[in-house]
Length: 74
Image (cartoon, rainbow, N blue to C red; front, side, top):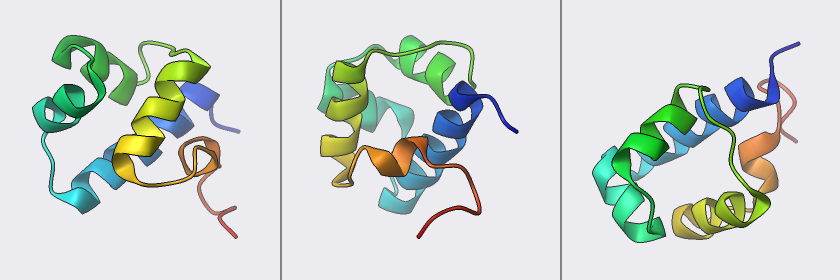
């Protein structure tokens, strides 16, 4: 089973790519540094629930979309 940080990283990257946004675009929308967002997308940094919610809001998805494992989306 994948680490939760890795699952979030994969889902975050996929959702950001689907919007056609760069890391800079998303970081600006959420008020994060590009460096920190890059670390989250590589599974190298954890984030607070507050940041998870802000990312989900910016991407217009439910926060559960960021934490659900691949292949278990229903």
